Every structure is written in structure tokens, then in C-alpha cells.
Length: 174
Image (cartoon, rainbow, N blue to C red; front, side):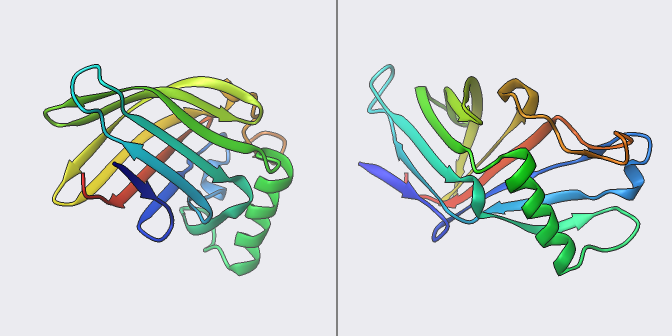
């Protein structure tokens, strides 16, 4: 039986950090994906099936928080960040993940598969922990591996780090 996840029973987030000579001027961001769905089918035993599929709308991001920086982010700042992500970084691209293999382990689930982002596919492996009705996991995605140029400003002296952290927290009955 497949377990379905989305914004009604789970949270999919992206965490960015900053680099560059004037990194202190920028913010580390916590973004939430507002429109997405995932389906997890658990394997029925060693080497016996299982699948994880996820599809997310790149235009549904919202800024939950910005830490660091010279000043706190206001509503206009958050709107400008989302516009920049839509126009210059993700450009409304399709975001999909399809597992190749799901391996049950004593401490959780190891998932290996292909991420499609900005028209490119690449391998991604991550672990999901299952405990007390909760499923959690995270992975690092390197933007340049998918042809995405990390955002930069001030002539490149303020940049979003190439690696971003993608995380999921969900209620699960596995």
C-alpha cells in the first residue's frame, strides 16, 4: 500500500547558505515548497520492489525565514527573493524524483534515485528515518550539477552557496 505525502501531512523545505567576501550582508534562507506530492511504496522484503516518487512546483516556494544579514527580511524582501528564484534561478522548472532502489535498514530507509531539476537528471541518495509515526530525511543538492548557476549579487561578492539542503518531515504510518 502506498503512503501519500504533500503539504497537508508533511513539510518539504530547502535551506540555503551564503558565501563570498560580503556574505555577512546576505541571509541564510529557509524556504518551504507549497505545492508538491510524493508517494512512497515500501518494499515487501529484500530486493522486492518499493518506490518513491516526488513532484514539486518550483513556483510554489515561500520564504519562511532569513537568518543573518544586516537587517531582518520584511515582506517586500521575501517577495523579491521568490521573484528572483522564479525568474533567474529555477525559472519555473520541473522538479521530480524517481527512486531506482529502496533498501530497508534497521535504522531507516536508504533511497537511491534520479532527481530531475532544470531539465537535467542526476543521481541522489538519501536516508529516511522512521520513528514514532514520523518520517524525516534530508539530502544535499549541488545546484551546478543540474546546470543552475547559484544566485550572486554585488559583482559576485555575495553568493548563495552551491549546495542546498532539501529536507522532509512527515506524519507516516509505515
